View 1 (cartoon, rainbow, N blue to C red):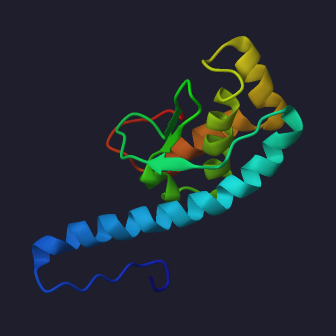
View 2 (view 1 turned 60 degrees about the horizontal axis):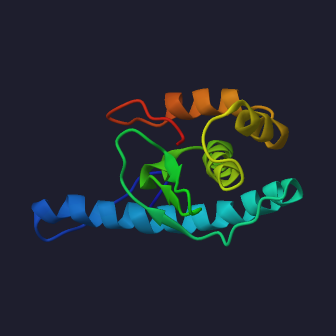
Length: 137
């Protein structure tokens, strides 16, 4: 990575996509792990606790998801977003560990933790290109 550009050198052109995909996943894992620690501190006062573990999975319609058991899954393309937008998605999913679904109580919790979440969601969907419009979860 130099001046915002990724230089890829491969012996066979057909390997370039695989190399870039692998690099993006490694970068996503590192950045999301770092941001997860920040977000865990931010949600802790709201009785949300999580071990911070997550999986990466390319999803065409979501930035992240949370299972009923509290397993977090994030789209590796999220790493292309600004940090405040990444934090929004992580906090969105962490809130599901306390209030599963998208009820009014869920949005009230999200709003207490992250009052500007609607603006962050809009910004995220404007600045990161996807093949489809995606939602946080």
